[in-house]
Image 1: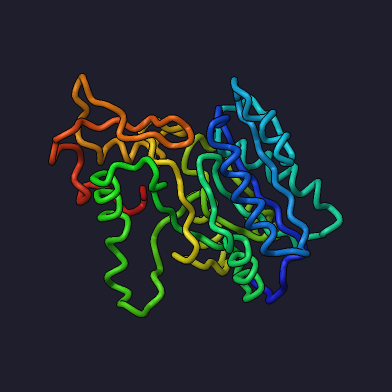
Image 2 (image 1 turned 45 degrees about the vertical axis):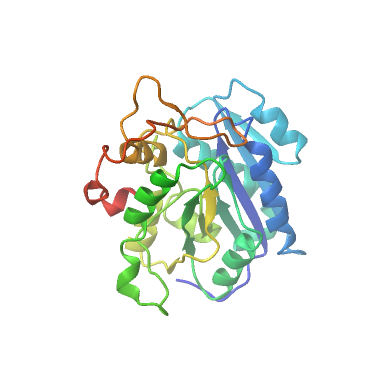
Length: 277
């Protein structure tokens, strides 16, 4: 199904729920990434879903196109963002590339350039990886997360590309043509990214799984989507004591709390299924 055609335009879709403290950093990183693919047209669409804060206003001020929804559902929000992006890029035809990230995430400068290059090689989708944002992440939490996250890497050897098993809405790209062929994002409150990837794979689309240009996402324990990264991190964090203090402060004023001085506790990385990472 894949064709070796450079995308005619790029759209970045960012769902957000009450992310006024993080949205500016996310959009700054996206503007830098967009400059790396110039003169290719790039539009950024922020979907402010059931927001009660200044997320929508700050996103618009930063130059993003803003869609406001009330679904409190990330699958619905992502789909609404794609619909708006395709309207904005209607003149670009079906050569539009759709890049996905999250409002609590920053992307590296070459993030979009890498996705565009993989599309030009004939890939219909790109599944990237994440790192926990280092500014506020507790080293013990990072170590536990990484032990599970990277455990399949050893089977690929020192020089081999890591065909990782992960799917993240925070680091995902797909051609508009492939996205539309498989029916787009389902209205799921969580797992909408894995669902889309499964349909792409099952219908024979060419999917690249890459660890190049990972994004940095917030290491918080109280998340926006049930069953997402925050729930996983909470399961890896030592059980909080009554007087447990925040493990640090990021630009969003952190949600991560771990008990100091607790060497163990929580769920073993051996208990975390790879499919949930």
